[in-house]
Amino acid sequence: GAGVSQTPSNKVTEKGKYVELRCDPISGHTALYWYRQSLGQGPEFLIYFQGTGAADDSGLPNDRFFAVRPEGSVSTLKIQRTERGDSAVYLCASSFPTRGELFFGEGSRLTVL
Amino acid sequence: AQSVTQLGSHVSVSEGALVLLRCNYSSSVPPYLFWYVQYPNQGLQLLLKYTSAATLVKGINGFEAEFKKSETSFHLTKPSAHMSDAAEYFCAVLPSPGGTSYGKLTFGQGTILTVHP
Image (cartoon, rainbow over all chains, first blue to last red; front, side, top):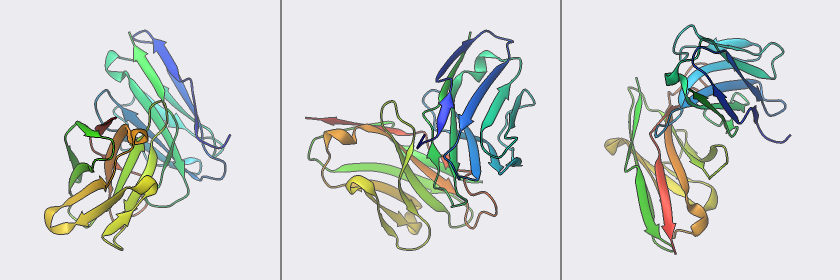
């Protein structure tokens, strides 16, 4: 597709379950980012990939959160032992290495009951 | 550390009226500044950016913003609002030169713009 694609668009899970969120970036974009947006807040940085490697994971809140990008394209954000506080919209963005010019997907809304 | 403050979580204007969305930043070094817009059921998209060139920056859909270092501000304006401008607007900051932090943006809390006929 032409834009950043995120699946699922909505995910409802129970506390303690494991969740995977997928991001398919724009073809050719080497940089990929995950952000989290809680209700009424702006997006908050989680992790940045340049190619296959995580160049900056300083925004991951704790070790329950992990992300991979094994082939330098699609990325998966993984959340273990989900908690109610993890409920948010998880945004993926991709770009060329151009400062601040990110292309965002529509997000995956995660609800933890 | 940087931060961004958007004054006013909701702004309401009449169609044809001036749009002014306020953004103030704090940064230890001159930053790069951005405005992103999120239309209903769409992803965020870049509206305009300031990267230490001209202080008055023009963006898409008739929007512009002026970087004022003395006021640490980067307010977004549009002379005449259109119904299609209704959306949520986010101001964001990036360190300059930033090393490898190409996309590690710090966002404000957002301002929802409502346009009345």
